[in-house]
Length: 120
Image (tube, rainbow, N blue to C red; front, side, top):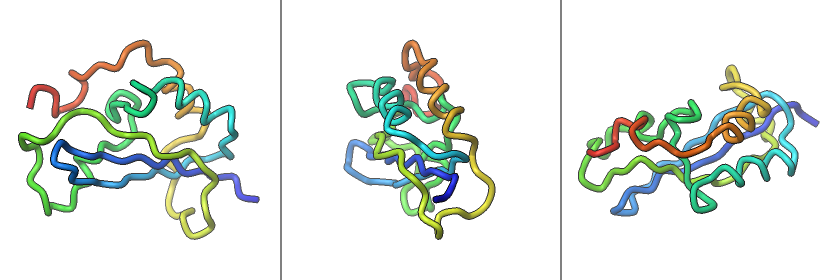
């Protein structure tokens, strides 16, 4: 049993261009942790990466798509919070599961102005 988890998410623009993202977290995520994250999502699936401090997919684009463009928006989609596989435990964790869960739990309202793509 390892003590790391993966927070996996996705950015899908209006043209359905997708960028998958994940961050390594210290600690083992529980179903209760995932429930708190899901409860904090807008419409049950969306969040603003900049508001919780995880890397925005826009910043991870490989250059194949110029950013921002008219299809871009501020929302990322939650995929899953799960135990990390051995080959995924590389480098330093972004933070801990507890930190991620606390950030989602503290969101009162998602603020689109926190993203550089707000109003783009």
